[in-house]
Image 1 (cartoon, each protein chain N blue to C red):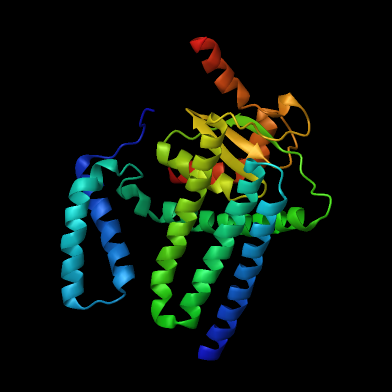
Image 2 (spheres, rainbow over the protein chains, first blue to last red):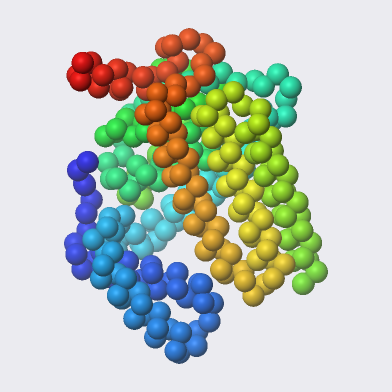
Length: 170
Length: 118
């Protein structure tokens, strides 16, 4: 798979150092000086080895517009997760088991690998859908209650609400 | 303040427990692997997240750590279910279909591969 957005070596290194350090701070949940120094050193060493796998984004991710859309995405996602659970609960409890399963496919407009991964994860956690495979820009989605086999309509029903926000972030 | 946090934590614990139970029931009732994964993944994600968050609320010193755990669950759970579903299809465990063969669009990918090797 080709990588359309791959930030430079230095950017990757600094960002993965930063993220590892923040995770360290959250896990130790203290600002004592010896913990912070240990964290900086540990994060530096791990970032040395792992920064070449870091392909998600560059520094523009911290611009206010993008941060706003990330915040927006978080709430859209949370709402989808809750409705997904209520949907599953409804199907499981009802005695007739109202399912009409199938695997549908559609194409995405997203280009970066990381954005495709986020979209696939979000699709898995939204009502009635489970991403089975991504081949280039085609998604194969298991749908518990198939409403339409047409790729365009499936795309509209399953992915559009996430995709339009992700296109603004990545 | 502590009491309010405790009540919210208890409610989250109850909600998480209910969803985890429904997920288990779904795994029991659904007809094939893919539908079981559907029920399992969604229920364990929200159920696990709210149980872990409720632990953080009942024990406020752990709250930030539980937040990290919630993020890890939200990232790793869908990936594992995708891997299970895809591996299952590669084992030729085809999904249960009510509407007939045209409801399985993923089949064409493997048919092409089979024709090429044949």
